[in-house]
Length: 388
Ligand SMILES: NC(=O)c1ccc[n+]([C@@H]2O[C@H](COP(=O)([O-])OP(=O)(O)OC[C@H]3O[C@@H](n4cnc5c(N)ncnc54)[C@H](O)[C@@H]3O)[C@@H](O)[C@H]2O)c1
Ligand SMILES: [Zn+2]
Image (tube, rainbow, N blue to C red; front, side):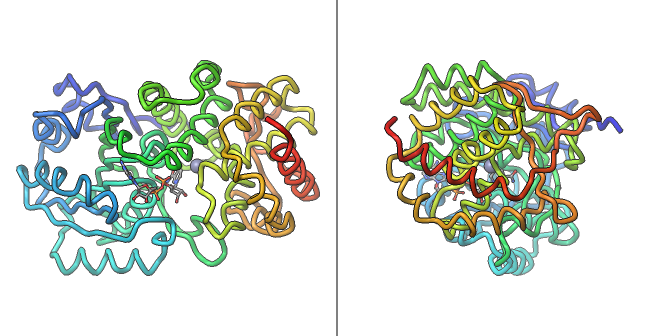
């Protein structure tokens, strides 16, 4: 079944096109300074919401709130009554408990079904607040204002949200498209370099799964300046929007976005979430890339190229942190991954840089023998411990 009108990247300078794009479930607007330096953000919001919401509720974390809270409240409160809900920063907030706190706060503030929630922050705020908004009164509208590289190019687009449970990452969640995503790379200027690195993990992923041009640009620009990364935001968003529009509910093609994530999430969980998502995904790509090469799917020269870039980017401290993790624990979490079916380990693997593998029947997911996980982790441990 071909799905239409899911996500569209719209031109911020053409408000008429934005108004007409209302039959898309989600609109993505990208421009340097779009939120932080624009004088007509309220016109943009009017174009996105011709029937104005009864209120806005900005949900953010305390770190982002310190720098940007007032500015964002100022923008939205010019249009309608605007509330603020602040959560603690970091992955530890992605729980049912925090979600319930948000829901109770929304009730206390009398937020009704015609209101809009504004998710200002990184992937944690987006996933947690997006989940709360998607179940509060059976779901209210949401706008993402992503402030990390990872959130701008990945987590704010596509409608997936959720919280972690004791069994692993993102075990509970929904798919609900945000009405709009306002992407302003200017936010990246205050982002600590460790968080920039997290986003780079996903940028490499886009390069491997869909764009040799993005991959080449990363190779050429490493070590990165914020301007170089800002230029990659829009091409990455366009890939994500295209993939999600083809397969919103992850029936097949959307699984290409999970490259590096089956083992990446398992590494993240094994580190008790101390290792950032993007770093874990880079390790996941080393492991899953190895599996793809062993299975004769991934071209050997491209596997080497992928790993050379990842090794150049990963901080030296990653090697001892990975070495300290038991491969068995990683295997256990990988088997519990929600992308698996009937207890079988499923992965999406690359064929070459810029192209994912699909089977003769057109499936982008293939079954992986469970016994390949531990050797793949052993490979990554050795690769990271050898000289760059
Ligand atoms: N829903 C999806 O499709 C999807 C996709 C990828 C990742 N994710 C999820 O995203 C989460 C990771 O997101 P993240 O990497 O953005 O982490 P994050 O949300 O924890 O943000 C990282 C840190 O940066 C701070 N921060 C945010 N913006 C800042 C700015 N502009 N300046 C200074 N500090 C800033 C935050 O306060 C936080 O401490 C994970 O939970 C992951 O599972 C979801
Ligand atoms: Zn990811």
